[in-house]
Image 1 (cartoon, rainbow, N blue to C red):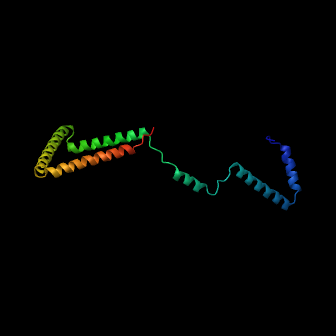
Image 2: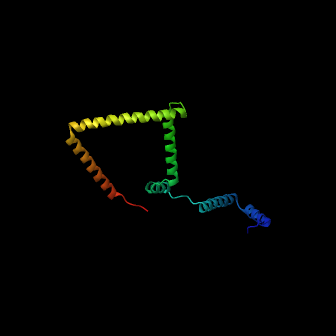
Image 3: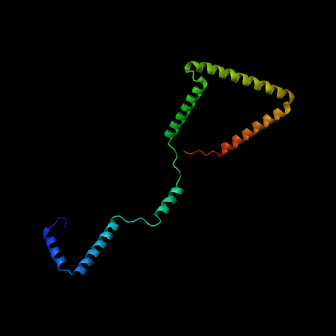
Length: 158
């Protein structure tokens, strides 16, 4: 039946010619309805709540974790950009020659800050040694307690 037979066409034409116009229209309408049904069978319509079901599954599905390669690339890009920005800031636009001078100046500034903090701590220690010692001990104990709590809550996933 896959091959096209011209004799069947002639026979079909004579049968259609023998029908009344109303019968011919009814037969054509029935043929159209059968074609629609066949199209629906080959490509069925989705259920009425299809979109809601998909959206519910999307909402309840866990978010995919970023790949380790992507995270590593993001870290490299971030630190590279920060290093380039820091270098540009420290050189003040003077190029590589200004970078060494900027680092030396930065180290001198850090030295001055540390000397100031040391003399300030020395002054506080001479005037209020007991409260400072108690505050430092409390801070140390609180830090240890927090680290212990964090250590017990961490779950190892393999």
